[in-house]
Image (tube, rainbow, N blue to C red; front, side, top):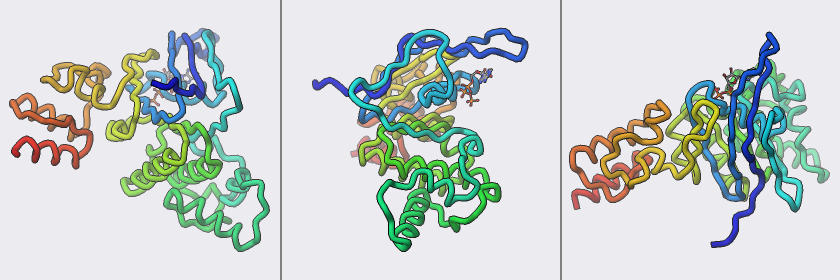
Length: 280
Ligand SMILES: Nc1ncnc2c1ncn2[C@@H]1O[C@H](COP(=O)(O)OP(=O)(O)OP(=O)(O)O)[C@@H](O)[C@H]1O
């Protein structure tokens, strides 16, 4: 098997935050992970387990108290992020100003520049006038503007901290599709989320529990356990105290009733397929 290209890696990393009283609060202990080219890593865990701290560390916004973060040795990796609080990221006052920061170097004719703004926004499902003040946007629209700007750069590494938190189901779908397209063009993705249905997109799941990595593996192992869904009793998802999506719970219920599923489903379509195949 060929050696995978590491874009960034954490080694025995710890983070201690200083509280207002000056005391140190350890948020992470001994976190080690590699982010390799071609990964779509979904990071999941309960509130306060240290997921957003990971986004801050990877984006260079938070320093490690001990351990190391190493970057790709050969070249600078173009990294972009979308943070949980969209206002914290804005550098302009209007959508146009925000997008101008990521405008490609090449010169545009007026007409093609207008088309570039429109395309950049429509990639995440936005059709807003570019002169709109960012202050007048909803939280979800702000998040989408940040994502549009991040995707416009075609980053090698994209760090997303709950990118769909403020979005309705249609916009969530649009965002997943836009990030999938970027992934297919070569962007490596780290997607931090509370939404367990977003785990299905992952090539690798990282489960965070109380500032430590408690699980690292494929989505099916996360939801059904390492023994291939053979009557799962306690899965990594359950161990983190997380409520599995309806599809997974239904499949586990079927397995417990003695139904043999060839494929352990991650989506409704896969569940229908697995049930139909079990009847055949
Ligand atoms: N700047 C800070 N100063 C002090 N403590 C902090 C700071 N930022 C985060 N923390 C604490 O670190 C812990 C982990 O926070 P973090 O935001 O990384 O968790 P999270 O898993 O992303 O949580 P959530 O799912 O609720 O967003 C929490 O206990 C939080 O209170």
